[in-house]
Length: 297
Length: 332
Image (cartoon, each protein chain N blue to C red):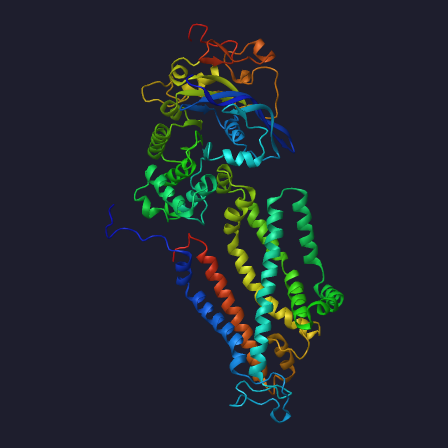
């Protein structure tokens, strides 16, 4: 074996490629920090989220209230920390729901020829064409009571929101996955895998899906942001979590009427959403590149 | 013909149903491959040679494709009615195939080692480590230098010829008894072609397998095969030992094929032009009663248009489907 100085380095692993993506690394650190803060923060900053103190209404950041207070004098840091748990959980779970449903439907449509494919795409188009808001109202009115009765108000609303937000965002993923499948399944390596005895499921999971994943990840990361915003829209309409449950979107909406007198109120939740979305997008970019071995940086 | 037939195709018909009608790609092909021999399946594009080969492993898309008649006997067992699960156990383990395009036949997201190991793990139920060792061993066997280190490299880090070697390593990793090579050298440089043919020959010797070599290149036939089966428009029109076929081709089509090989020794016609076969292959929808080659054949007579000639010949080792073979008349 000749190992001279000219010996080329071995191919980098997925993790090594991800690490070379500087912004993805920064995104990971920021998201990790955000997650740590919202998970551990309430244990350290143990100010209750709902102590009303009219003497400290709309207070600017100070030692007692590091991020200031809202119109009821409630501590914003405590509310932001608590709300972060809900918002991040909703965003990530709804994204997972959308990606899983979309990938499943797109994959089935892309692999089956003929009527099933046509039917699934018809359903996708139908969902895309449906006016979302009336449908949301309908679903929530129909199922909220049943669900909250079953698993309690907090969990019930959480499940419902994830189902609704994720369940109405799978269509772009499905179309994307189907389009990817249609091209990739005709590639020769899939036929080679078939020729070497790979079952249909193995062809899909092992050979087609990994090659289709790049764009799906990007769409997935964008839908996290959309889900966080969508949750706040629901809260705004009174269809989300109860008004006394702070979420980032909820705080932002409550703050909008006081923008001129208490800009800090809107600034911090906005910043939190912004940081989350941005870091997730960078992670998505990094993941896409890291999963593609041809990418040499 | 030596030994017992490993693969025996009997009167295979494969059709594709399309919007324009039924395309009868293969219209009654019979051929045998004996243990350890290399049989070339020759013909121009669209003659049904690839469809025949893919039918053996049932790789044609069904639907729209369909094996409408015939039997494919693999060691005496008919593969045509076999369910997919059983078929998957024969693939790679008993019959393997390599394709024309080495640039696209490997999955870009896995290292070559992982891809070979996947086949080994799937078919031979080996553990992860053992499968990886096997992958290294195979890469070494097909002549990838420094295999131990290159096993973790991805397909895009290999050249075309090297990728074809990887494909061969993958196909042979479970030591099949038959390798179907579907135009394995068509996409490669001439120098690399020779190397790949040599490699196939070496692998054949070492593993004792048979090869069914699909090609349109008479040069490849002459170099690699012992026996050749010539196809035209979905049918076998001549078969026999390669040296016989080259020295005394019986069917006018085979003669045309051999005459159309460029030669260095002045075998060209008076005007220094390469000889070609006039006309083009018949439509795949067409179904004439007579010989399919008749419209292009210089020797065609009235009876050629009336009935399809059967495979025959004075010598059972050299059969051809022609009523007026020049072999029986004085050579022109």
